[in-house]
Image (cartoon, rainbow, N blue to C red; front, side, top):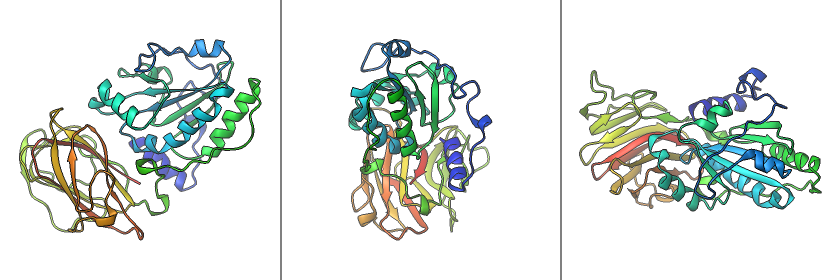
Length: 346
């Protein structure tokens, strides 16, 4: 997802990606590769069988903790519902970013919670991802009834353009579709980001990819270590306190009372986390600038900041009311056994 956020920073600045930035080999007009993937809705998804029936196909690459994908889903869901009678078939390809996203039960629960009724191919070994030479979550590939890739979209946004492309491909396939566009309003975690007030980017917490981590200790990586909070975090810096193990892709809490502190500028704060031992739970509390969040609480905590980590997923901790300013979030885990992977913002 980090590459996706770099992409978005370019888009916000008005920079247009060059053709060579697209995955090699999947230029517009090329033949879409066939694939077969097992999933929880159908035994097999075969692209070539859909094309034999004259279907227009939208292939969407996703991973269930990706906030960028979550915010595109209201549109993809609406397109699937509106145009399925006209010959559109939407196929999701779930290619995991984190190891726990390979757990099919985790994927199934997430898809059910989001009320997604499109087939989702499980791509744990990146077979379909590599077949498409894909690089991003989310990524949309628009395939016409002759099996050619006619349009691609990497990341959020440009929804009107994408829907008009769907309409065009359906018309070419013989469907009589109107030019009306869907009216979509995301709810909860699916609400579009507040791009005008977004001053913090996604950050991973493991030592391999993290940025601006102020609690580094020599030779502590991969080992249990007692961390102490440094004073006066600057924007987009973060730190730990308590007994943690900082691993390559995550941080794990060894004793109760450990904290993660992050200085951010965004309306929304999310964290990908879960219990280190599946089937257990970890209580936590969130403070903003040392106080309970009140009306600024996210959907996974209450106004006093209390929540419980039960599943391995993305948790929404903060949704600031106006005005959005620099704030400091403190997450204190009241029990041991939490594992945190990344922060995302919106």
